Amino acid sequence: MPSDQAPGRPGNLTPEQERKLKELWTIVMRTFGVSPPPSLLESSTITTTSTTTSANGSAAQMSEVNTDGSANGEKSKKKRFGILKRKDKDKEKSKEISAAKPPTTRTASTLSSPTVGADDENDKYGQSKQFKAALAEMTPEELRIAFWSMVKADHPDGLLLRFLRARKWDVRKAHVMMVSTMHWRLKEMDVEAIVFKGEGAALAEHDEGFLKQVRLGKSYLHGRDKAGRPICTVRARLHKQGDQTEDALNRYTVYVMETARMCLKDPIDTATVIFDLSQFSLANMDYAPVKFMVKCFEAHYPESLGICLVYKAPWIFQGIWNIIKGWLDPVVASKIHFARTFDDMTEFIDRDILWKELGGPVDWEYKYIEPVPSEDDLLKDTETRESLLEMRAKIVREYEDATWTWIYSTSSEARKARHEIAQRLRQDYVGLDPYLRARTVYDRVNYIQLNE
Image (tube, rainbow, N blue to C red; front, side, top):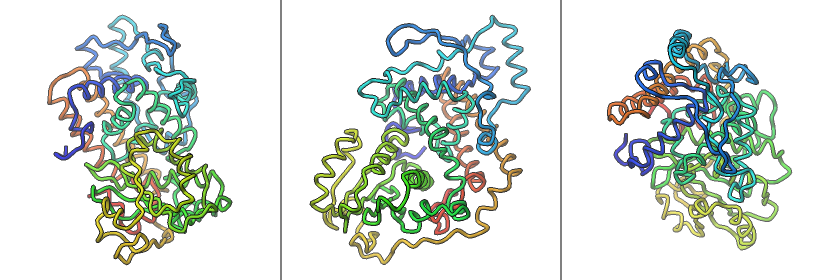
């Protein structure tokens, strides 16, 4: 891993942090219905049944759950985004081992209970309730697909560590947060469909509410700050509440956040947001999208915001800010800085890369390049996509098996093996990306470069 990796990231964990990561992986794998590999089952005393403590503190043996992913599934999403099941011969081997051992029952108790109730005053976004809904509405396989679809080019550990850091290394709270996010991504926002359809489909379907956002450049990605973080600039003066539906704006927000994720490069795992409030007036104020953005950062894209710069806020924004800061988690609030002048901006961004719109010397401005008719042709090549997903499924299974080995091992070899497979997963995604993600304006201008 990079020698300058920040603390609490893959390759830079304390022994206690690694222990917490192992605990979370154990719960997550059981949530996904993923058993240890047969070879490990033969040589250990791993069990798949346990009793956990419910939210009210009582011991609870919960009902059996389906682990084959067949019920309540959305077949089109599974077919498009993941083929992650163990090969039949492995299943047969598992059956042979099970027949030779006392019978065990996989129960929902292995999923772990949330440590906060649905009415907990600290459960700001009702994630405990959403967690329970996820377990009731989604099969383990659906949750597994949602997770591996979110991983993309990330290190899988990196994703779990985001949730752990966001919940101050409380494993069960991190688990609740992560499962509720998988539910939100698959059942509420259908995030993978947003990135699959992209700008080209919006153009073909005359989705003017979505297209207006990207054409205006209401927010855009350009440049990097002193820490190497990609910069997303939001031009509040371009927003008018009645110009688009709330749904279109929410989809656009998710589109931008998912696109920004494609711009992260190890060891950088956060982005910088600039709210450009020059020429801002009350006509531009709209609390709903601000609330949605805050929720995304705090509940579903944890540990993704590096800093947020509020540039040239007028005096009328003071009252608005007093309302907004009441919504913010203290950790998120601490990342917000007010930059009243160009010199304030240069504390975080090099002077010679700032563009004229932000008071800098660089002659650059956002210009939208329309989709090229043939740029998303690979999305239609279902045969190749299925073949690539089959190959990725094998690497995913290798990683899951290696994770079980690492969980029950203290050897550095087990840690190294997982890291090497994680690197293969990243390289594999580079080839798969054009079959899963529609091209964006940032692909057209080469701002996204996954193969670097």
